[in-house]
Image (cartoon, rainbow, N blue to C red; front, side):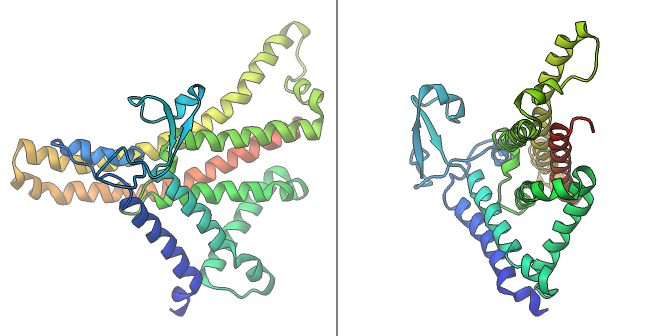
Length: 312
């Protein structure tokens, strides 16, 4: 029992509670005549405000060139600005959790002694190494790329799971964040593919042995395929996490619908059913959060391996 009061465990709790507190003291609280607008606003990124009663009082805002206006969430405002949202809070929290949770793993692997957090995440790391990276890339090559894949897996995992906490936010429900992660995998694929094979050989080996007349067409197909892969990584992670949250909120929304259409008595009578369904979906979401981190990492391993060893 004392292991649950270890400083590392308390630090994990402090990061999560601190992220939730900071978010809820720096975002505007939603008010609307429609309960559905308030309910589904929780899947939309919220600007961090220095004054929660004034939505124009951004906590941090940076002017952007007009060419980068696509990254501005507020299209109604003149001029493009990069504004911090609650999603960045939980991204930073995820990074801090990685540092905290893995700070004791090297010592545990050397001595066999450590707290519950170090033991847990040492097991996760060894599983990822022995069952995900090494079987595809081999021990020598896989060992070189292991830090990247560990970072990607646990960063996504912490973002996904952190978003399931009450009054939190899920960074992976933003397609910009999932696209950034996918572009990192694309960059690793292209850079190390060209480093290992050579810049010319990498592009030459994209196309297998085919008749010469088909080579230009196949080359075009393979080049498009290079960019379709990160697009698939982007959409899969974004759509799965967003869809799960929408299903949970939809079950909760049925309560408001019944209250508005049939009266509060019917809403209270059927509440256990809809809340039960929402809890059931939340349990599934916890599994999906881990599954999506695994799928993203596994596919990244396969894409990088195919780029540096095309014959496989």
